[in-house]
Each structure stands twice: as structure tokens, then as C-alpha cells.
Image (cartoon, rainbow, N blue to C red; front, side, top):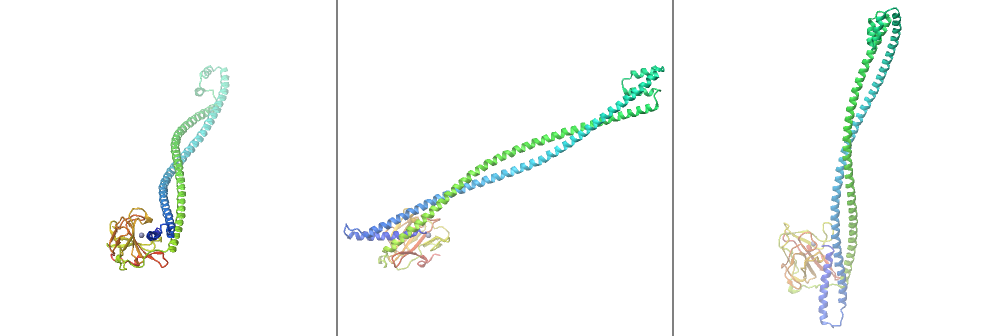
Length: 455
Ligand SMILES: [Zn+2]
């Protein structure tokens, strides 16, 4: 229990005041208006406001927790999208590294092709050169032939007809020279020249053949390289297609991520607003609590100072449960520092629910609420007035088994432990209240009044 408990003693006092006022009024004039009655209305009003603000705080807390749940869900979504993006990025990296390897392969093929093309160009030049030289040789042979023809014509004049017939029947220049060899009239130097030219022509012819063969080989090689390059280009295109598919996916996921992020931002904003509103309402609640305190201080309390004989009150309080138990949260604060104006009693072994609790001292039941409502966080609870300026309160019950006005003895079973009101689990919340000299009431440390005799 926290601040909510404050309200309890004020309610208690109000009830006592109300009873006193009602009693007095029964003997008073019907037209007499009690000043206490209007003062009570003021206190009632404060308490109504207090209950109202408490309900609002609870509602805002519920809504805040809903918003926080949504933030959690969306954060999960965001994380999932981030991991998708990261997967896509590594896929893109793999594709890019493959493309880069292919680019290197393609570039190497292109270098090879260009080298071979240079070689072919070189060979073409050589072929051209060889052709020029052959042309030149042929032309020299032609000249030589004409000069020989001149001399043969001179021989003809001298009557050598058969030689001329042979020469003119030759249609091929090399067979012409072969035949010429047979001829006796050619000078030694002419014969040497013709031999030389014939050999040279044959050599050039061989060279041209060889060059053409080389060129054919190189051209075949280029065709092969071009085919390889085309295959690589095809693979590169495939990879580039895959990459643009991944990039498209990435941009889709990224825009989804942006959407989720903007939802989270909105929810964060809502969450901040709820927190601010709760903070403001809590300040309002504390202010109301101060006003109620001030009212009670000013108007006093009607708690008696002498135990009623019928209560069988020996001025001693006993531990309010009879089973083996321990204190799970003590007075005046929880372990987190928030206020706690009583002690929480739990069964050893954790099976508190359904177990009975008992009156710590004899007295009169002045409050017994069994409606299952929030009731300032107490849930179902009861208060016993011991008539000696002390009261005890028992909260979070699943079933209160006494009613208002009932007289109980110390140790009487008064209810069943449960988990109603502001609890995280079943336990008995037990308070001791004492009237102060100025008429106000304080919640004191129960362990100054009771000792755990079950431990
Ligand atoms: Zn408690």
C-alpha cells in the first residue's frame, strides 16, 4: 500500500463522525443544521476527488502500459526489418564481389583480344610487306625476261627458230625459266639472276603462307576469347539483375522500417504524454491528501481512549495469522523506496491464498468491505477499532468474514487471505493505526505491536 492508505484513516474517522453526528441529531431539533455535517460534506468531497483522481491515474497507467506494449511489439518488428536489411546487404555484397571478379575476368579477356588484334595487325603488315616484295620480285623477273627476250630475238635473227617457239609457247613464268635453263644461249650471269629470283619468290610465297596460317590461328583464338567474353558478360548481366532485385527489396524493407519507426516515435510521444499526465495527477492526489490530513487535524477524531469492556481487550496484540509465515515487505517502505504503511505477511512456501487471518486484538469491526472493488488498493478489507486509541487493518482478502458492528475477540478468524486490490500476489496487508494527541491518526510500525510467533 502507498499513499492510498492515507485515505483509509480519513474514511474511518468520517464514519465515526457520521455515526456521532447521526446519534446527536436524533436528540437534536429537526431544524438544527449541524456544522459537523457540512464539514463532513467537505471531507466527503475531498475524498470523492481523491478517489476520482486515483481512478484516473490507474486508467492512465493501464493505457500507458498498453502503449508500452505496442512500442515493444513495434520494436520487435523494427529489429526484424533491420535484420532483413542486414541479410540483403550481405547478399548485395556477395553479388558485388562476384561482379567485380567477373569484371576483372572480362577485362583480362579484352586485354588478350586486343593483344591478339595487335598481333594480327602486325601479321597483316607483314603480309602486305611480303606481297610488295613479291610484286617487286615479279617485276624484276619481268624486266629480266624482257631483256632475255631481246637477246633471244637477236639469236633468232641468226636462225635459232626452235628456241623462240619454245619460249613463246610458255604461258607460265617459272616453266618459262625452267625451259630457259635448257637453253644454251643464256649467259651465266642471267642464269644466276633468274635462279636467285626464283628462289626468292618461292621463299616469299612460303612466308606468305606461314603468315596467313598464323593469322588464321590468331583469328580462331579471338573467336574463342570473344565467346568466353560473351559468356562472362551474360553471367555479369544475371548478377546485375539479381543485385537490382535485392536493391529493390532493400528499398521496400527500408520504407517499411521508416513506417514502423514513425509509429514508434508517435507511441513514444503518447507514452511521454501519459507519463506527464500521471505525474501531474499524482501531484494533484498528494495535494488532496494534504488537504484531507489538514481537515482531520483541524476536526480531530472520535477514537476512544479506553478499551470497551465488552471487547475483552487485554491491551496486547497477537500475530494475525496462525500458520508458518514471514514478512515479505516491511514498514515504512518497499525495497524500492516507495512508501508502505503496513507489513505484508505471506505463508512460508508461498501458499498464502485461501488461508485464514485473525483479529490481532479484541475490538469492534468498524469497516468491512467485501465488494471485490479496488477500494484505495486494499481490495476487500476490514478495520477493527480496539477502543484504546488503536485500530488494525487487514487488506487484499478474498473473503471478509465479519461485518460492521460485530465484536471480535483476539485470535478470532475474520477473513481469508487473497489477492484483491493493488497486489502482485496473495498476501495479508496488516496495519496498526494510532490516534495522536492532536487528534490526527498515524499508521505506525506494526512490528512494535506484534511479533511473528509462527516463524
Ligand atoms: Zn502491503
